[in-house]
Image 1 (tube, rainbow, N blue to C red):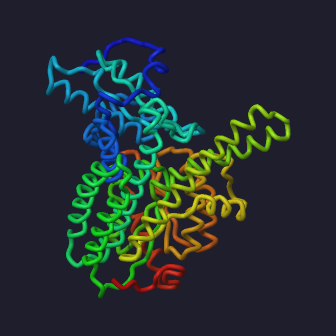
Image 2 (cartoon, one colour):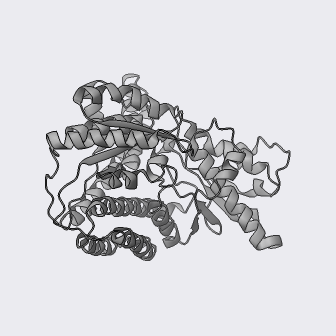
Image 3 (cartoon, helix red, strand yellow):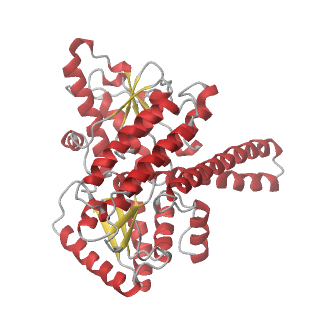
Length: 457
């Protein structure tokens, strides 16, 4: 692929947005190595040809076509899509048709560079001959990740439900990994099980998701969880517990955060990362909250025309959030009968916590709201330390750090910032060792208040 010197401003609107997914190859960036594949399996269950992009192998290409002012996930995902298309072109030769591919790249509004990824990557794709025909499918937080225009209206609700089930399953599998690996009987057996879990659940979701047979999916997941419990060595005592918050891509993308969770485990910790479902719930909650505010405003202004629209949206997002939290409770409740994994925080509880402490507000969007509230909740639950993961120069990440650091110092709870940009920071190992020393001291003084002190297998 060779870049061309062409600019097409119209492509920023005509080639970025919502396009029908049928009869195309839908390319999904790998943010989460389990979640991305299970979401792709959901697409396939509904007859959509979805493919998860190999990740981090094209980072050099991504950096070549960025300036460094973009946040790190932009460089990663851009490199992933460019490497894939370059490889496809070499493999298929004259048969390569860029118009057969759709690049699935969600976005968000608010004060965050993530909201501009699709526009910037659109310009980069347009600079290569033929790749202007690769359209970018972009669902957005502005409408709660609505699927309108992607698939038939009659299947939208079923697809949305199935996608959320896939997200819950992915979260549980990862929490199973983090629960077992620090206490495994033999080194490496947990990673082997988790890879099999991913493959098994991928097949189960692809087979049952479109039919709404979620009980079959849950049965298969429960069997894997029960098998996983047998890998725990009951003689091993509980370890200090660390919570991870931060920018959603980096805290879940193992390569870009340099396998942070495994490193913390190697230093003697048990780790719980904030989930993907929590972010989805946050988006639904935010839309519900926004439309409640609009409803009250229009009611005071006697704007009855808009009241009906606001009420309709309130009911939609309210029922959506209710369903999501209900399914979370069902799935986590079932597997918790076999093994004690950490459950998700309720977004409304996090919002009330921020309001009570009066240190931040949900009126300001981005993951800063979740990160600050989750840190406060982790501390209240007796976690022995918290890590904030974010791209270098990330505004929400630095805002979280500025607000939380003094609070954690006052509460004497160990706290660590870990910004990433793809480089190997010279002081990183020292910072982690220092943090873990503080975590061990906190654990020795306080144990795990609010958590299980000595877990039995």
